[in-house]
Length: 74
Image (cartoon, rainbow, N blue to C red; front, side, top):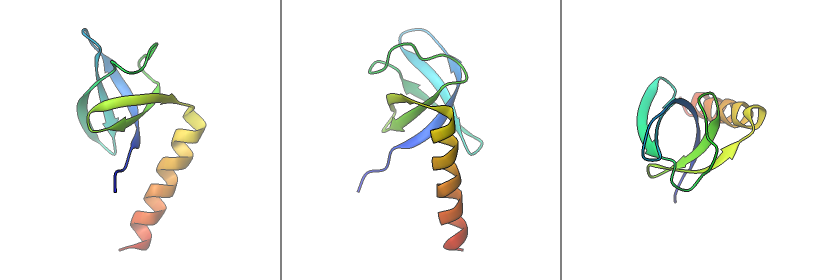
C-alpha cells in the first residue's frame, strides 16, 4: 500500500526542487509535476514528488486525522 502525505512547502529552490516539512521533518522533493507552488502551500507528497497542491484547510484536516490515528494506536 502506498501513502501520499500533505506537507508544507518551506523553501522553493531552482530546478523544480523544494523543501517540505511534515511533523518537524524536512525533505527535499521535486515540483516537476506541479505548477505554481510557493512557500506556505501544502502539497501531496509521494516518493519524493509533489503530486498536487492542496487547500490549506483540507491539508490541516488530513494531518489532524493522521495524528488522531497515531494516538489511537499507542
